[in-house]
Length: 110
Image (cartoon, rainbow, N blue to C red):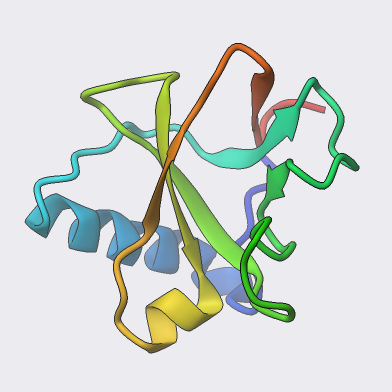
C-alpha cells in the first residue's frame, strides 16, 4: 500500500488515526478506507478534484489536504477532508457530499 500523509512520513498511520479519533469524538464515525483522492469525472487534474497532498478546491493556497475519511453513516456519499491549517488551528475537517460525478480512489488503486 502506498499510503501517506503529507509531512508525516513514517507517522502517517498515527496521524490518520488521530484525525479519525477526533472525528469519532464529534460523532462523525468513519470507515477504514484509506482514500487518496476524490476525482471529478475520474480526472485527478480537474480543479474540482480533492487529492491528499494538494490544496482543497476553494480553500487556501499552500494548505494541503492531509487525510480524507469516509463517513460510516453515509459510505460512498460523504467524506471528511482535513487540511494542514484545519489540523494546526484545531478546526474540524470539512464534510464533502459526493455525487455520481466523483470517483473515490483509495491508496491501493493505481
